[in-house]
Amino acid sequence: WTDHVGDKNNNNVHSVPLPERISSMIFFPVTNSNMARLYIATIERVFIWEISTIYKDVMKEKRNDSDLGPRTTILEQHIQKDAMAISVTANCFAVSLGKNAVIYDLKTHSPKCRFEGHYGTINAMTFFTPHADHVLITVGEDRTFKIWDCDEQSLLYQSSVISSSPFLTVAIDPVFPHIALGTYKNSLETCHCCGSFFLFPFILYFFFSGLT
Image (cartoon, rainbow, N blue to C red; front, side):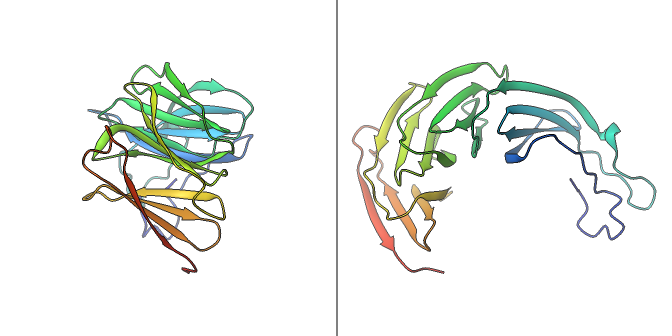
């Protein structure tokens, strides 16, 4: 990792070898601490690494293993884990396990619930922040997206197959309740969620093909 873009000597770059390929990562700041929590997923496990956020003078010190805090494994299961998401307000950490999503308590890292419903691997996920922090959106190889309520531990909405290729990424508009979905074959899907969405799901689709 690095914390200094202009560091030509790479003094603030430190590489840590791992025995498995990393499939997804996400940072989470630790309150009232000089450490940040890095969630790392591989095909074998999900673990948390605390990393020092104290800046080092690139002319005097190099990053090394002393900047790493304890590493805690919260899940061990041989399965693809391509997506993770965190909602601080809802106190939730989500990770994909193949076709399913598991929600953990962000503070205790104990499992809260498991969402099942996709027919293909989940490729991306995000919380519907800032509009509804407890709502998780997942997209997958089955060319659908699903919307889950982590508080009620239920499925709020599932789309039909709305693309000719799998969804690879999802993004949330921070101002308006819009969802953008990216697909494999140069296309973009955007959705508008109305104010009464959570009681009466109503989504408008706008499809743009051939975007580069």
